[in-house]
Image (cartoon, rainbow, N blue to C red; front, top):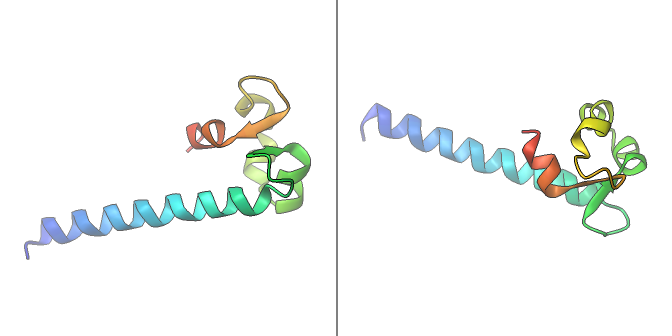
Length: 74
């Protein structure tokens, strides 16, 4: 196998793993199961980066962070 192919495969694998971790963290933090994270849920989950940016990430200003809004932050 060529080195470039191996590097590409490794990068794709890491990207998939990274997205899976974010999705798992989002789902774990969503304690009420509504598919969105409130500021309180983010704080309770220790997701400090999202807490600090909550006002700017909540683009529709509904007081919740949707998966799409969280993904756009990546």
